[in-house]
Image (cartoon, rainbow over all chains, first blue to last red):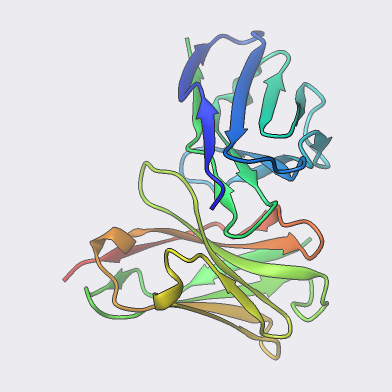
Length: 107
Length: 120
C-alpha cells in the first residue's frame, strides 16, 4: 500500500493568510493526487485532482503543485469558508489511500 | 446533477453483517464510465477506501478488509451495495458511497454519509 502523510496535522490561521499544506507519498505517484475539503458532518468535497487541476466551481485562490512523492495545497488568501479539514488522496494504485488530514482553524 | 444516497441500518450487532445500499440519481450507473466506491470514516479519524465496483460487476477491495467485504451492483435499480461481515466495534464509522471516473480514480461525487454503529 502507498502510505500518505500530511503536514502539519493542524494549523491556526487568520482570514487573508496564505496557507500551505504538504502531502507526501511513500513512493512516486505520478501526480495521481487529489485534495478534498471536509467540514464537520459533511462529506468530503473534491478541490483538486491530478495534483494541480482545479475542480469546477472551486475558487482560484486554491492551487496545488508537486511531483513524484511531494505535493502541496495552497490557499492564497484564506476566507471564512475555508476553515475545514483537508485530505490528500493518491489514486495511483489500489488500495487508494488518504492522508490523515490537516485541520485549519481560526487563530 | 448526479446525487448519491446511502441507506441501511444505523445499528448492527457485533459479529453480524453490515449492509448498505447507495442509490444513484441524475445519471445511469450503467454508463460504463465510472467506478462506484465505498469509503468509511470513524468518528474524528481519517478516510479509508473500502472497495469499488464497476458496471460489469467486477470489483476491487482494500486488502485490509477483503476477507469480509462484498460490493455488488444492481443496474436495474441504479444502486450498488456494501456487505461487511463479522463486524466489531472497530467498524463503527460514517460510511460514504462515491463515484470516480473510470480513467482517474479521484472521487467527484459523494453521498452525504450514513453512520453505522456496531453495538449490542
